[in-house]
Image (cartoon, rainbow, N blue to C red; front, side, top):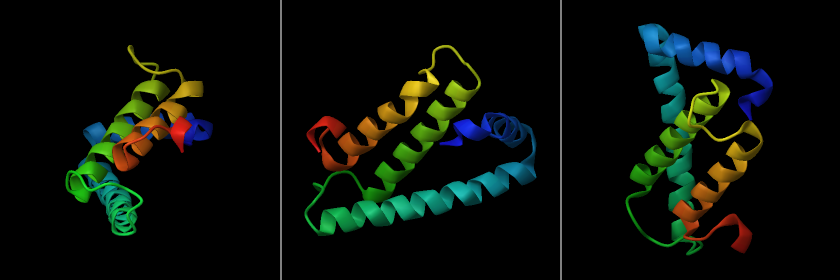
Length: 107
């Protein structure tokens, strides 16, 4: 997780908010993650490992954007936020539930 580079993550988030070039670079980066996640969700659905549901791209966008926002809140000590030692487990639970319809404890 980016926690080992917390100051870089925080600085990047701040720059994204004020610098159009950084925002564009970040958008390109996020689109790559969204595309990869969409492909993975689609593949899991095609092999009947994940149930059909909302469009894979919509789910991918929601999961990636949610993760970005949660990590940003955690790394900047925003209130409310999830403590850093629990944020990854929380995100994994949300991703598994969203994609497979079950929690990490049932996998």
